[in-house]
Amino acid sequence: MADVGDTMSEVSAPVRRVLLISAGASHSVALLSGNVVCSWGRGEDGQLGHGDAEDRLSPTYLSALDGHEVVSVTCGADHTTAYSESFAQVYSWGWGDFGRLGHGNSSDLFTPQPIKALHGLRIKQIACGDSHCLAVTMDGEVQSWGRNQNGQLGLGTTEDSLVPQKIQAFQGVSVKMVAAGAEHTAAVTEDGELYGWGWGRYGNLGLGDRNDRLVPEKVSTVEVQGVKMVKVACGWRHTISVSSSGGLYTYGWSKYGQLGHGDFEDHLTPHKLEALQENLISEISGGWRHTMALTSDGKLYGWGWNKFGQVGVGDNVDHCSPVQVKFPHEQKVVHISCGWRHTLAVTERQNVFSWGRGTNGQLGHGESIDR
Image 1 (cartoon, rainbow, N blue to C red):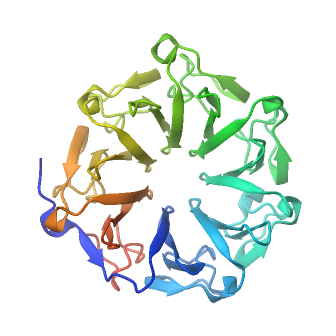
Image 2 (cartoon, rainbow, N blue to C red):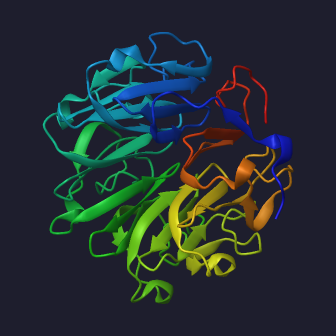
């Protein structure tokens, strides 16, 4: 297992506790205790929410969300969302093309604005892809909006939606969580069933073929029969899921080894990752072409495309099998998030680490270089 060496750098530990981190294409957002939101990295499309189009090379306090009691933040490729439980309100900002901000138009927004169509809904989770978003309510219903050229909204059409719409295909099904890729979407239900829809050219829907789906379809291939899924994540064009027993499954595009099966072959159905079968997986994240998995005992593994060192193992070589990421003083990791070309991690000591592409300051170290 390779030592990270100088490829990984630590962002100075904040005074407040880090509750959540989320990485977009070239920007990063963190939620701190006290409902404080910070953002940094690329700001050209307003995705940082500071009211301008400037990059930020270090974590910068997002004053526009003062007093809104934000409890979650999620990055899309070039846009961002936040949710306030007290106000029962979802906010969005950044690049607005294809209606991905949910405000009924395609305009960019440089400060957070409430999505009126979601006001009053109790939100369990939000997922943002390249150009589309989804929100799961506490009742297990799913709202989707944004780009829909391959049916990734699950509405039965290929028409973009400028405002959130309920996915009717989940009527009678309680959804636990959703994940959004470039043009595809995945979901796990409270019963442990796995669904896929949208763009399926690389088998990233897990349905055994390369066809698109305009509505959610249950993954019922032999590999997952009798397996209860509890988590799902999407990379750009691959999908990762975790079973109730901590097993890791991947499928879809694998040109860069991002599925982790020791080869560079696409898989059209979920395949269990044998290399990590002795580990209980607790958290997963998919980047543009790389994947990270966190074990229940705080160990982090990465694999896939590694041109900018985003896998975090001390080299720039693609890895088709999991490699452990080493941290100073063997700190245990508690949270991870993959951007397109960079990765973020929080350790039990409340240190935030970042590595990979840094040209827009998305690593948060006050400079615009890769690490």
